[in-house]
Length: 90
Image (cartoon, rainbow, N blue to C red; front, side, top):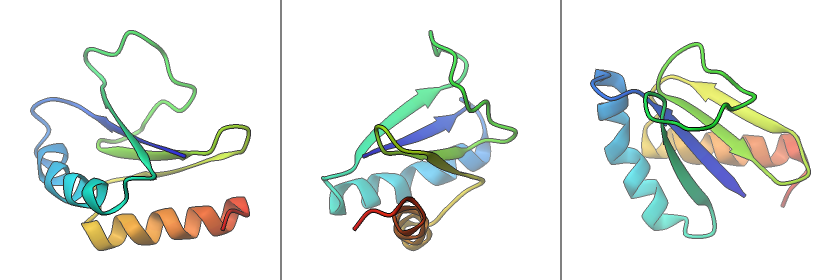
């Protein structure tokens, strides 16, 4: 399972989101967190964000879910858990 964190350098909301993301990452080592700097990305993603930061949870071979805006560590956990339920993952 991959959690993409799409951010733009200099974005205050993105900077505020990095600390909770790092704390969430330490407590959830089974989730692969991929940070994507939108100004330096060499690839085009099929889910162009409307806002930054944007979180995209991807399960290979399944649908993706996304959230636009800053999330706390607890909210990240809720987003992942609700997404897993939506995608039918235990």
